[in-house]
Length: 217
Image 1: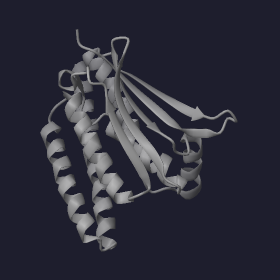
Image 2 (image 1 turned 90 degrees about the vertical axis):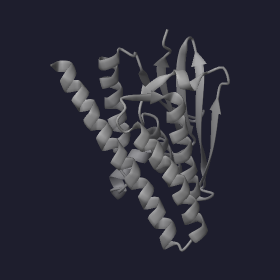
Image 3 (image 1 turned 120 degrees about the vertical axis):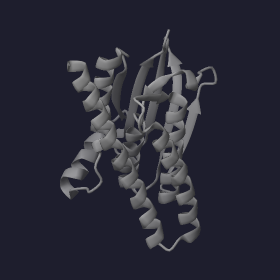
Image 4 (image 1 turned 90 degrees about the horizontal axis):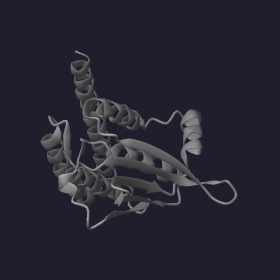
């Protein structure tokens, strides 16, 4: 009975995640239309349609391949790069020896951290920045690393408290909860680590998020 309840809760969390994600993309399209940028609006809609197809394909699945998850993240990065133009750059690096299609992860588990890096790390800087998504293997564990050179979590939290920032980082909280649920349901031993980067003077230089998944034997 406990497992059934956990499965229902995990399903409910997935249902909350997808509308949250789509809502933010639609807001980006709305902004481009308001700017009367027809060419970019069409390009954005084309990429967005590919993204929606990915989401529909994984909507009823507890897990998807890491390959599919990364493809969704690439589309999201592309969408936001178009939206913010020169506001930020991004890079995706995947170790060639990793077979992404053989690794299963909870659906839409990575994207909220990328969203958080962009909206709460890079955008408040007003001087541009970079987000990187790396997939590597370390000691038999697959690590997905999301890194940014934004303002850091402490300054971001102060900004949100001071301005009542409308954009919500709800997705990240849902992701952490889903990882905990996933561990209970699958005994996956997934781990989440968040590192606050600082320079030699103790000033924030961004945030690094590491999602670790044990490879299937």
